[in-house]
Amino acid sequence: MKTQTITLASRPKGVPTAENFTFETRKLPPLAAGQVLLKTLYISVDPYMRGRMNEGKSYVPPFELGQPIAGGAVAEVIESQSEALPVGSLVVGSLPWQEFSVADGQGLSRVPAGPAPVSYYLGLLGMPGLTAYFGLLDICQPKAGETVVVSGAAGAVGMVVGQLAKIQGARVIGTAGSDEKVAYLKSLGFDEAINYKTADLPAALAAAAPNGIDCYFDNVGGAITDAVYNRLNNHARIALCGQISSYNATEAPVGPRPEGKLLTTSARLQGFIVSNYHQRFPEGVQQLSEWYAQGKLRYEETITEGFEQIPAAFLGLFQGENTGKAIVKVA
Image 1 (cartoon, one colour):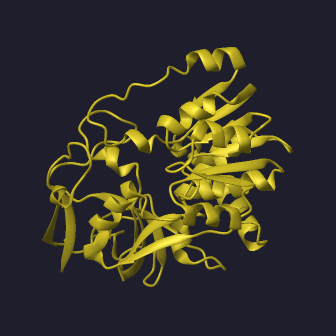
Image 2 (image 1 turned 120 degrees about the vertical axis):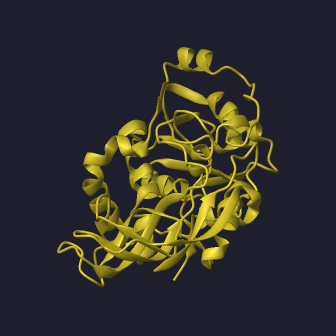
């Protein structure tokens, strides 16, 4: 059997382009004992993948030149040599950017039947939702009445962070890159939302957080983070989740040094990767599922249709084209 696949053709310098990807047709091997043939239904595109396109050591190995790119996906078992994964099973895990693939079941989880769409296991009930859950509740630990700021608040992680902070009784401020996204955040219950592209950030934060900032969930970095640090309260907690503002930088960005702010406010800054919490994933999925079933969590997806549109959907992440989780519907 043959399948279409997308491989890394070259390593980008700065912002990735379509030329960094190549479409190929590859032949799949026959199934061995314990293996399954998967038909890809949904593929997740995520900002962290940009780092994997570079050479060098990180918390995950880089993508290899000439080899398929891989990431989160939901797939259907259409042929099986595995008792654990019969034909018709839906699974979620890290899979290559292919229409069909062969897997041995390692790292795959069954998608349970329930009220949530299966694609939510790439978003609210998957890696982004778990990132929000552990980063906010384990690191920031917001208390009722405190002020929480979320950068990249209309993204797959940020919108969950804000709603979780509201469940905890906090006052929540989000930043986003358009008036439409600002309006969406307010519809989710955010107390304030700021268009960072048009606002005077220091003035907007001073108006939105007159009593200072107790918790900051940082998905973006850059000028937004510089402005937030100037409003930190004593013993503020900062969860460092992402720095998308600098992912395509060709030189190390130069900005205010944060150490003095952290020192004088006795603030805690902690970087984290969601896989740090892999042993607690079932806890996170169960709690997020309960809140979703209770109507306490809403979620948005930007779904692009067609396998051939995967690179464009990925590149769109860096132009702010998505609200919520960016997903490609393959089949």
